[in-house]
Image 1 (cartoon, each protein chain N blue to C red):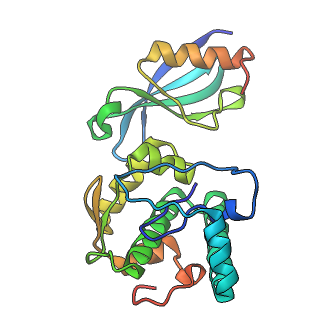
Image 2 (cartoon, each protein chain N blue to C red; image 1 turned 180 degrees about the horizontal axis):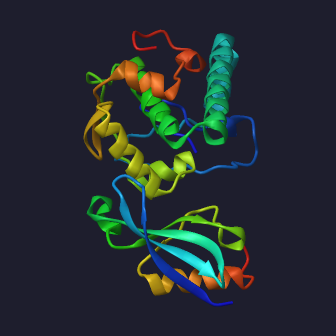
Length: 81
Length: 169
């Protein structure tokens, strides 16, 4: 299943750059870019919420969007929880 | 997870349980004393009241665990972090180690999150919110509570489970 990303603004405080994650035409999750206030994690991407198999007990943080997309695709394709 | 403060006996369990089902680590340099089980048993035999004291200690520890379970299961991230800060302030005060609601927390946001079932990102956001609302001040490892009634209210903190007799409690 193809995982695609669409830009969106997300109302975390303060408002942040984000991506809607689609698996085909279905919304699979929301990623948020961490800003400078997150110290070492600044610039990384946080899985704010994942749906279905993309939901994580631990919200993962990814170094870039490719890594996020790969992880979500793996989960949607049946990688264990 | 649990946090132990100076003077705590963090492993009374092993006096009665053959297998240690937990581990202990230090967040700061500490001075630790190891009491052989034989010596402790002999002490309790000679002074039976001490057995009651140790029993009481483990019961209070269990009460703290219950409170933490409620926190992880039912409290919002804001309330959970506020509750931990309130608990630490009151416990430090009971030891005479408080410094006007200052908290010298040797914890990273990852460790804080692990102890409360939160991601480090959520911990970061909540701490920013608490600062913005004037409840806490200072930086990461040297926080201070700037609005004690407000923090207690957010946490719905009732220190009864700590079974202490101190001013903040």
